Every structure is written in structure tokens, then in C-alpha cells.
Amino acid sequence: MLRSSMSVSVIIKWGGQEYTISTLSEEDTVLDLKQSIKSLTGVLPERQKLLGLKVKGKPAEDDIKLGTLKLKPNTKIMMMGSREESLEDVLAPPPENDDVINDFDIEEEVIEVENREENLAKIARRVKDYKVEELNPPREGKRLLVLDVDYTLFDHKSCAETGQELMRPFLHEFLTTAYEDYDIVIWSATSMKWIDAKMKELGVTDNPNYKITFMLDSAAMITVHTPKRGVVEVKPLGVIWGKYGEFYNKKNTIMFDDIGRNFLMNPQNGLKIRPFMKAHLNREKDKELFKLSQYLKEIAKLDDFSGLNHKHWERYLSKKQSQ
Image 1 (tube, rainbow, N blue to C red):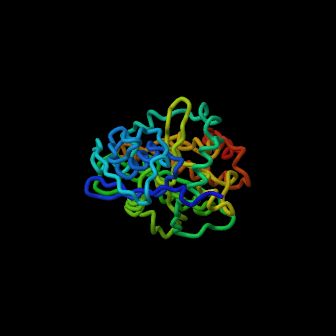
Image 2 (image 1 turned 90 degrees about the horizontal axis):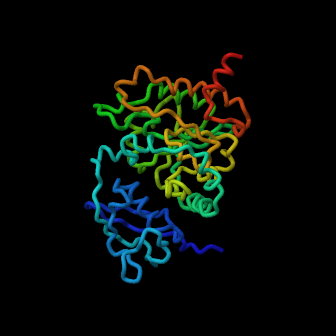
Image 3 (image 1 turned 120 degrees about the vertical axis):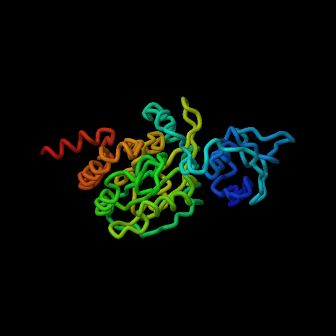
């Protein structure tokens, strides 16, 4: 039987504020802790100095497991470090286009990562410890659509007076149509307070035409080690399937994200959407959500998505439409 003390909770003090991190376990490393801190504060791991985190009198290295540190629950750790960007830019940890440009074709990494025991164990811990705040109950017989936010639903980098100016064209029409066949979950690599703020600003949270089932933040993500790219953060759908197995599974779930590596743990279910940037220039031209709503409607007729290759979604759609 697993001891309940396997989870680790710490409070990070930085910039006059305190941040609670309770999603880690004794098996996670100091680097995993730093990645969690980055998600909350925007300070990059290499710029963080964690005071008082020591092993045998020396500062704990990144690869040290947290269990080795024998931390008491809610230990307060002081962090020194500054983030490079302003708070506005931290609305999404992915810096300007870097993640989009530095993204990699996941096929070469998949087999190595998808079934590794330590990654499945991390998912199991998220299923157990991550608290989902349900906004609307799952609906029997619906498929599941999981949506990223930044560069997927809106351009978070351009300047504007309102979020509406940066909203991807056809967003509300897309969500309204999708809601007929799919429960909708929002999953962003930021903290919940920013996701909440963005969804309210875009008029998504209380829209009368569709409902959001729940939202997930960076704390539901896991870090995985890839042979060629080192440690990366990903969004494992296994967290949702583990919590809502009676509704959602590999056969009825599709996920949109502009960063392909977020699908590393579930490549078959991911559709890499074209990033929406430079909203003022592209607002009139971008029809991605309009076309994707037609694709979702088309595949909703299937009982099982696992035979689809979402990379070829446009080819699939034009074939169906010409029949």
C-alpha cells in the first residue's frame, strides 16, 4: 500500500507573494519543482535560486529527488530570481513564438515517452491529487474536445484594448457548433487565475450558447524526459481519462494545441492547430476554427477516433465534403 505521505507540498515565497505547490511527490526532482514554480511565477528554472534547499550542506542539484530533502508539509522556501518579461507577457509562459518555432515533430520521440513507467506514474499521481473544479457536468454520449488557449483561441502577444480584438475569428460559432457533439475542456499551460481571466474577457465562461465542462491549468501537466530534447512539459490526456473514465477515453477524445509536443503522451489524439498570431493583420484571413468546426462535426459521426490521423484533417474533410 502506498503511503499518503508520498506527496510533497511547499510554499514558495517570492516578490512579496506566496505560492503553494502541492502537485508534486517524493519521486519528483528539484527540476520538477522549478518547472512548477515557473508555471506560477514566470521565472525560468535556470534563473531560480531556492534558498535553504540543501543536501548534506550543499545546494540541492536539479536531479535530486524531493524525497531526499525530507521536507515537512508546507515548508516555506524563499526564491531569488527575476523573470525576463513583464507580467503582461507572463500571461502565457511560452515566450514570443519560441515554443512554436522550437516545437518538434513528435513522432521520433513518441515510443520512448508514451509508455514509460515513470511518466504513467506521474499521470496516476495527477489523477489522485489534482482537483478538478467542474463547471458543468459531463454529458452522457458526448465526445470530448480539449482546447489550448494561447495562440489557439486568441493571440496573447499583440497589443489591444480588449481581449475581443485578439480573439480568434469564429471562436463563439466554433464552440457553439462543437458543443452539440462534444463536452469542452480548456487546458492551458498557465495558472488558473489567468485562464479564468482570459475566458471571462473572451466571453467564453458564461456564454448562453455552450458550456465549458471544466478547465485545467499547468498543475495538471507533467514533465517528461525525451531522448533528444531533454525535459519538456506535456498535457497528458490520461489525467482526464483517469478522472472521468466513464465518459471519456482514447476513442472519443480530440485535443487542439499549437504546440505539438504537448501531445507526447497521447499523440493519436492531438491535432496541431495553426497558431493565431498578429491578430490585427490576420483577423480577416484566419478561417482555422471555421474549418475545424466542420471537421469536428464530420468525425463526431464515428464511434472511434483511433483510426484517424489528425495531421491530415484537411484532406479528410475535403474528401468527405466532396462525396
